[in-house]
Image 1 (cartoon, one colour):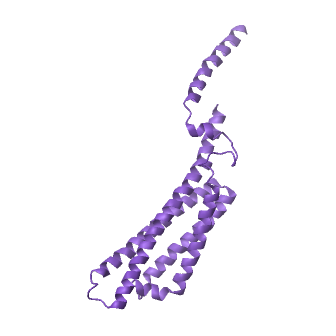
Image 2 (tube, helix red, strand yellow):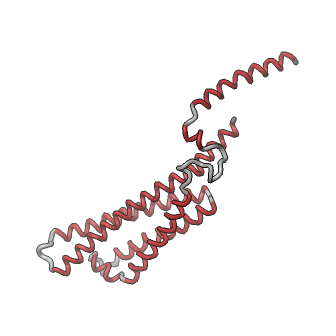
Length: 207
């Protein structure tokens, strides 16, 4: 019995400096973001919850306004992009804006319920929407640039429509950039709020 207790004591003493050496190499974020910390005590990067809600409501509001404009002025929109017969540009823009609104509503639900898996679904959906906005902006800008090659030959009204089409493409590209920035903010919130917290909880259980 005495031998077994001494062996256990020596084993526990051997393990202590190893754990101490591990704790000395803990990243700075781990020293600030304690295991199981609440929302108020987290570090500044983790306090992105108000920004995420603002992004979600902005997506719903801006998407609804733009979708209403496209639906009410769809004919003029297709004439501006020279797709009145196929209605391609209005349909594609309406589909993308509908996706933006749906993603915004999903983000509001996910942020309020704090569902990690649903947040991952939102990130996948947002990635597809961002690719759709980027492709749509390139299509608009490409069609407008082709029309500018024949600028001396076209009439003033057609030239004005070509200018509007180019401006629409540029604003769509800026929208893609803004959507990518919002995606980065939401991804940072997902990483530091859920993934990093899960890692810390797992390390606490292992210790």
